[in-house]
Structure formats: C-alpha cells, structure tokens
Length: 436
Image 1: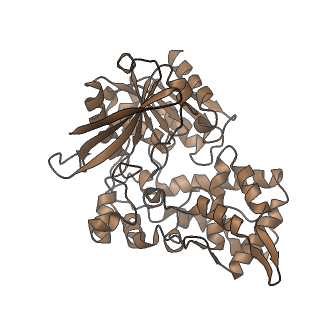
Image 2: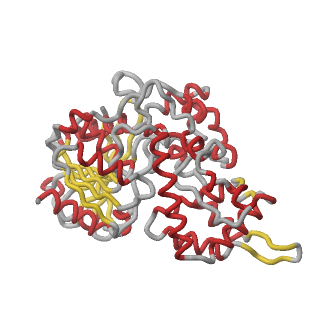
Image 3: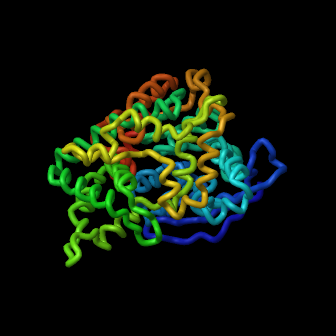
C-alpha cells in the first residue's frame, strides 16, 4: 500500500492533516486494481500527536463521507482530549474514489457496475481500515467510533479483526446479526408510523397541511430545481427527518410555508421546493440509495428484492392515494429506498438498471460472526436510543446481549443523531462505560 501525506493546516483549536492511501479494490486480490482513500487527521492544538492514541471515526450511511467539522464541533470536543482522531471517508464517498452517476458508468455495463458496488459494503470498509491502521500506527490497535452504519462496520470489525481494536464505541448502530432486509423493514414501518403520530400530536395543524400538499402533487407533480420530480411518494419520503433530534420541527417549518396564492390559484413556492430538494436529492450521497438494502444482505441464496417496497404493501396506511380518499393523516415514510427513487431523481436515474441488478443479486456473504462475538474480548460500549426510527431498538439490544462484555447506555434523551446533537456528552458517557 502506498501512502501520501500532505501538509498540515489549522482551524480554531485544532491541527488538521490530510492523508491519502492506495488500497486494493478487492482485498482478496491485493495485486489487482487499487483505489484511493482519503482521511483527515485531527489533533488538538498544543498536543503532541505522537503521544496520543488513535481514534478512527466511521460515519453513518451508507454513502456519506466523514462529517466536515469546523474546529472542535460536536463529539470532537471530547475526543480530542484523549485521542488523535482520524475521520475516514469510506470507499466510494467524499474524497475516497467517489461513486456516482458520473463515475460509475465508467465501469461499463450495469452488470459490471453492480459487481463493482458489491465491494463497497462493511466487509471491504473494515479491510480498508485495517490497511490504513497498519500504515499509520505501525501495527498498534486503535479505538473505533461508529455512528449508525459506522456502528454496523464496527460490529463487523469485532467479528473479523478484533486484534486491530483497543476498544469500540457505537452510537445508534448495533445491527441485527441475522435479520434479513425484509425483517428489518417489517420492524421499521410500525416505528415510522409511531413517529408520524408523535409529530401530528405535536403539530396537529400539519395534518391538513400535509394532506393538502399531497393532494396537490397527486394532480400536479412538480419538477424541482435540478430536475427532481416531486411526486406524492417523494413528498412522503420527507419522513426521513422524523428520526433526528430536530427533524419533526424541520418538517413542520417546511409544511407551513408550502403554498403561495396566485391569480391562477395556489402554487407551491420556490422557497418550499428548494428546501425540499435539499432534503430529497441523492446527488451528494448516491451510494445511500444504491446500497441501502445491500447492507442487510447476508444469505447467499436470498436477494434483497426491494424489501422496503414489498413490505410497504402490507401497511396500507402509508398508501397516499387511499389516505386522500378518506380523512386519515398522511403518513410519511422513513429510511426506505424504492424503485421510484431511480426515476424521479436525476442523480439516480442513470443508475436504475444497476439498482435493479443489486436488488436481484444473490451470493451476498454474512457480515457478522456470532461465535466470535460471543467470545469477544475487546471493550465495547454502545448508545442505544429508545424507539430509534432508523435502527430497531429490539434488534440492537439482542445484538448487545450477544456480544461478550458489551456495555449499553439505553436512553430516550436523544434521537438517532444524538452523537451529532450532543456529541460531547454522548461520547463521554460511552467512555465512562468502558471504565466501569
């Protein structure tokens, strides 16, 4: 593996250093094609980095590069007291050989693109991390902090390369060890419905506002800036907001400013449409849509088969057309990807055939080793958020019980993004658990 290190630079209270690494695309073929990874090192100003242990941060997703912090934002404030932090853009995201509608077609046919994307799950990400660790630490283990999908990666790390870890910290990211994509969504829809009802109890005026917007879109689908087609189903997917700390409030403010009155009748305002576009477009993170169900695929014989779409059919309260025929509140959907995403979003439309092939793909390999986790010797602490909309709490607690020595902090103080919303406190609580 080759490694490049650029000059260091400063922000308030921190020294930053960019790192680039060349790693095998397929770790089973180390002499084959390589891709470039990017990571940003963060050290508190005035501290000697060589005297600090490393902490690797794995972002949620899939498909998101590591968060671009300014100074000591969020959980960094606490982490920098004890660690030299590495913010890794996972392969295919950020500056790590990004994959999107512009770069994926360079791989050839949709079948070749799908084969390529199969190498961008947690198993490859962890092998990347191990390659980077050996280059940076000289072989010494490090601590990993995994948020959401980053916690899935951390759990895979514990299953396959525990020798690389001093400790593991997981926030809102303990996956089921054996649930299929279908089972994940069977558990998800009732949680999402509860989040909807909680939102409407807080903002009862939004019941009529959401129905009015949905009815308007059913008659007049709108093209957003950039070409995204806002259909009723796409509007419903704004429910993704409901799993974050301030998401219900954000949704309320979106709905209250939706319409303008014109001589031709009510129209959806440009301000509303632009705000909606920023929430719905996958232009900045297309791997989220492409790989979202694949992160749950573990049975070699079973494809994911658009699991969220299939399970939705068993929950008619999420059917907007039927809702608008009656008087029920419109239910927003949550963290679900559907075939129509690849028709309404210009960032995804060129990849529709690739997405279909991924949904039909078999041969996926298990990501977790229950026997190895049952014999775990790495200190692990995990924050589990009560009624987490994105990751099922019941699944997380069963996994916590299956990992030897894992300590949990189950809390209703935060939503899924707790480490972002109140990062120093969440991280401090987990570090305290490790010492108990």
